[in-house]
Image 1: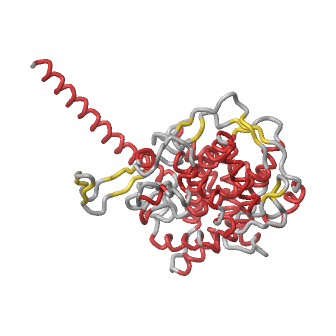
Image 2: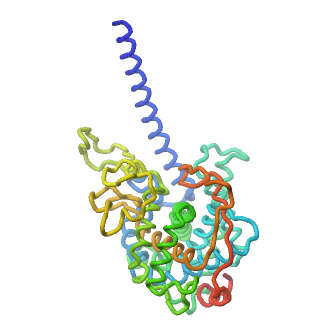
Image 3: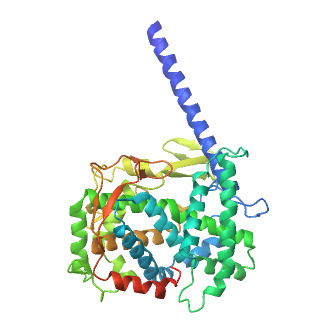
Length: 437
C-alpha cells in the first residue's frame, strides 16, 4: 500500500513538473517573439505589435488595411506578372549550381535563392551582384542573432543582431530611394509598389522607417520557410526518383518537356502550372511531411471549449502544424512520402477541414501561400526539365526542425549541366530583371 501511494505521489509530481515546464516554455517562447518584434524595429517606430501573433511574421498582421494590400500583392494577376521573373531567378541559380565543380550546400543556396527572389522580384530592387551579396550576408547575421538574449553588451549576439539590423536598414533605404529611378519601363507592380500606393489611398503615408521595417518583414516571411521547403523538395526528388520520372511524364504530356529539356516554345503560364495535377500532389506532400514551421501562437478572443477542455478568453494558445499532420486520422501511412494521397481518387486532405494546414488556418493563415507554392512549382519544373543532380554523400542526412526544418549538413548535392538553351536563358536576364542581375 505504501508502495502504491509512493507511485501515485511520484506520478503526480512528474505530471506537475511537466505542466510547469510546458507553461515556462510557452512563456519563454512568447517573450522571444516579443523580443524579435522589438529587435526588428527602430525605437521611433509606431507600428503596433500584432494582436494574437506575438510578433510572428505572418504577412498582413501589422495593420488591418495590410490585409487588403497583400490580397492585391498575391492576386492571380500579380502572380502571373511575377512568374517569368521567378523562373528567371531560379534558372540563374540552377546555372550557377551546375557550373560549380564541387557539391553545393542545398539549404544555404536555397536561402540565397529565396532571398534573391524576395529582393528582386517581390520588392523590385535593382541591386548589383556585390550589393546583393552584402545584403544577404547582413541579413544572415541579423537572422542568426534574432533570438539572442536581450543583453546589450559588446560582442553579444543581441549587439550583433542590432548592428546587422541597422546596416540592413541603411542598404534598404538606399534601394527604396533609388527604386523610382530604376522603374522606367517596368511591366508589373511589386509588393512594395502596392504597399506604398495603398497606404496613400488609405490616407496613411508611410514613413521611411516604416517602409524599411515592412520590407524586412516581407523578406523575413519569404526567406527561411521557402528555403526550407525548397531543400525538402530537392531531397525528396533525390530519395524518390520514380516521383521525379512521373513528374517528367506529366510535363511531357503537356508539351513542356521535349528531348530532355524545357521546350522553348512552351511558355509557362500560371493556369498551365496550376493545371499540373501530379505536380500539385508532389508539392502538397512535401509540405505535409516537411512543414517548415512547426506551429504558431494565437490569443483566444473568447472563451471556448476544445475536447472537453475550456480555454479562457485572453489565453495564449499554441497550435502544432507538424503534430496535426502526424496524427490526423485522414492520412494513411503518415511517414511515407506518397504524393498520390492528394490525387483526385484518394483526396485524403479533403476528408477534414483542419487536418492539412501547412500555412496555418483561419483568417490568420499565411497570405503569401500562393506565392510560396508557385515558387516551389516552378522550381520543381526547372529541376525536372533542366537539371541532373545526385546526392554527394553516402547517405541522406538527418533532418532537424529548429528553427525550421532542414538537413543537419544542409544536404550536399552535385548538380550537372543545364539544358541546351543555357545561352538563351542568360540572354534573357537583362530583359527580365535588369542589367545588374
